[in-house]
Length: 305
Image 1 (cartoon, rainbow, N blue to C red):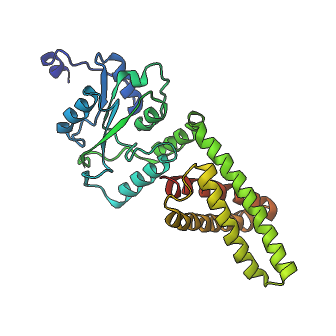
Image 2 (spheres, rainbow, N blue to C red; image 1 turned 180 degrees about the vertical axis):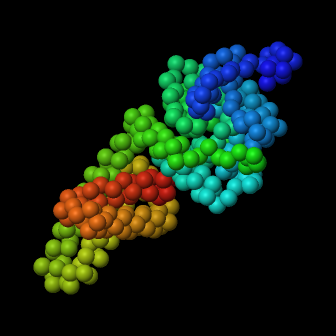
């Protein structure tokens, strides 16, 4: 690299001692960069160098403040990934949908205007910095450009257990920067509380006053409460037009609700039978976990627009 620096006078090289992380390496490189457009890409040709011009010119022509070499939009291609790597990438991308509609916020190939991160405190742990910039950066629009990603041949992916933990820690830490997500979660919880009350009232009335068999009452009250929750969440929590994809979204909402119920029952059993926790306490803990799963499933899938 030092020999190349002698030939390319505009090339700058940083030598860092120890393993300080890819994200910090990117930030250190940007500190000494002179240009108004900053970029990141892998040095092992996993990312196609021929796409650099396309990413750059989209910014130069003011088509975008931010360009991303995307592996998950039409025209993309991924070569050399095994099933485990695909599942890890898809899961991480899915979790990030709580914060952004960008299809590939986990890529390591992107360019930004310098002003996007001007006076922004960036401090991501691990090797994924793009999502942090998407959440904290100052920009108007992002353009994703399809690329062919070729898996590393000589080295293994850096996505080990430690990096997964850092990623989850980063996701939790981004909540204060996305107050709308917190508001949505609170509203979702309120709607859930209303739905629970409706469920209990209908169950009681049908069973005690009308004489319907309690399991039939339970099914009917669940459907009514779930339907009410769906409408309230659609128009109040996630601010969607009530008519937008109502049939499909109702089905998705129902599937997520049933999945959350199964999660609730699983953790209720786990905490009570395996860990020996009093069943009422177990149920409170299980409801909390199921609520989070329910919220994430509906935000990411049902009400993703």
